[in-house]
Image (cartoon, rainbow, N blue to C red):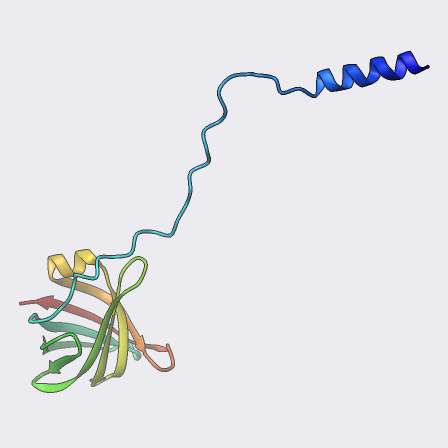
Length: 141
């Protein structure tokens, strides 16, 4: 009986040794959050004109409102100064405009909107309630 136990123990130890079956599998790729957008994008010194607005009643308004971004905190809406925010999200930029005819609103701008100088049919929501406010079309001058 001792011989069988000893043989089983030796066989068990031999079976447990590491076998070389080729190179190890490559490590799994590390998936990280997308690279943040370059915060060098900004609107400072730019003039944009709102050309069309679709409001909550689905009434379309043709407009010529001029937005001029003075610095990173202040802009003018048809010459009236107010504050705004412009900051990167993982995939786009958030533009918050305060004291507009539609209240304090915020919408998304993508890098191509900024480089092309064209924002089309972008949803802007109320910054306090996050409810639908307006859809805006605007172009950079």
